[in-house]
Image 1 (cartoon, rainbow, N blue to C red):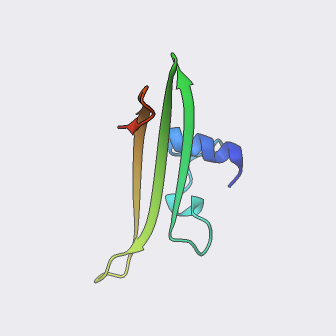
Image 2 (cartoon, rainbow, N blue to C red):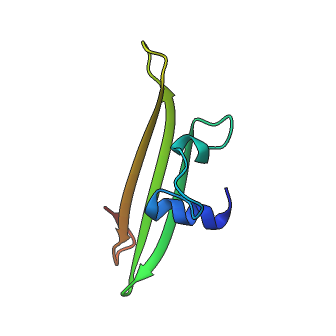
Length: 82
């Protein structure tokens, strides 16, 4: 996935061309992906991370997609906190 696409996926959960199925943004053969976007606003540094994990339900054998998103900010002492 290109640089621009990753940065659009991270804050919005979709790429500029439209919303794909989450499994389409995970590299073929991989079971997960993570995109991180760091930015500054009003003198504070922020970090937004989106993770997508692919799996299979044990009994049913059907696909699962888990998506997590977190946002942190950088404290003056250098520690990232949620």
